[in-house]
Image: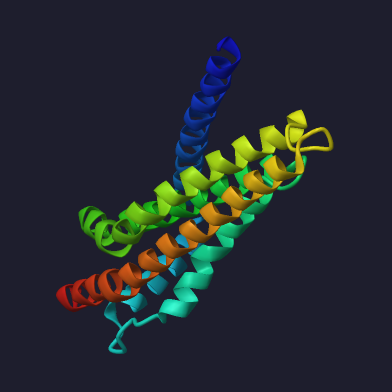
Length: 203
């Protein structure tokens, strides 16, 4: 019983650490954007203005968006399959946090108060779906990695138990892929429409 409680405590601690990792990564991305040279910042602002003001509507394909988000999910999942894979899973989640913090900071600096609406419209809908998936998959990869490290699915374990653990891990990956597909549809058919509406409003 104490061993099981200790295991649950470790898992809870990992969940807290994952949330803190993402939070600090997002802050680091925002600080990185604030430290950009003036020339580079002006170039980014010009690119964002072009995105919102262009006559050609911004219409990404579901497939391209899906592949963009899927690679993060798969890399996080793969981190649980290797002995030192936890570094990969944590690194991918941290990179995602830095990217989001950086992009949000650039939007705020470009449009000031309007930047908040840009972030809400362009980034929030799909990330309300994606971030819980990435958090859960990172936590899952860490838990699976610990099982591998402790040897509970190694040579001494029953073959049936090893198969069950891997089957569950693979099924959860496919479940996350389906959720990412939903997030891709949300970005293409909701967020991109919001971007076009903002572009028309700011002309």
